[in-house]
Length: 341
Image (cartoon, rainbow, N blue to C red; front, side, top):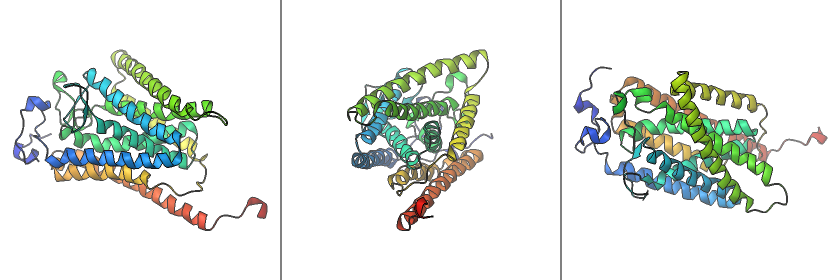
């Protein structure tokens, strides 16, 4: 990549901080509204999801709450291990420098909750549903990370590897981060569904859902750290790098979804609007920041990728809207019973 002009690359109105403070990134303090809008919006969306979940029952409340707890525990462990660190939000958990923004846990919860609402809606089989949940969440994360990294919401340090922090791996985002999302969402989604099917049968007491959330969180964290160890061994001895793992897992997830798609059932109710509000906000807000803060001037291929991923999210959720309208039409004009045909 050609040498970037510092005037072109700094999109913020504030003065640039010392480069070492932000691992060599040439971007300074973001505008005041950048963190505030993100934080308030995620808490607002979490409250909306909680209201929706309360109307559906304890299972949904615990799945959403479990996602929040899971996200906070996971991020705190990652920060403690030095994998990355966070910028300063209004509500932080822990002591500096090992702090985690509370809104990040809320973000984990609402992304996994709304993804499951969709896959539950069309009643995909367990593995296909977990794979679809993971792909939906991954699409959102790809939209977030490039912008959040450049606004210092969270930081990866490329200095020990002497790599360009703007171009290393996925435009400064480690592929291992995406692999982590794949393992986390798939584990939590599949294990929650599995334990619900095994434990919460007819006549079981409702508090089982509390235990299911706790067990799913613990098991998912265990899966993540065992897989991290296995992936490290593969990288060291087989040269199966994070980019290879990311591509391989993504292909397997698509295969699971395609294999399960024909087994889906026609939904009998309309899709909850919250399933479009959550991903719609993430895509719209971070893609808007990408252009408003001038990151599009940095790298043409990063801009192409950002637009392509945003369009992918829009097309997918427009398809959900179309599905919802079709279902509403079926409710207004139900199909005749098989006995009447």
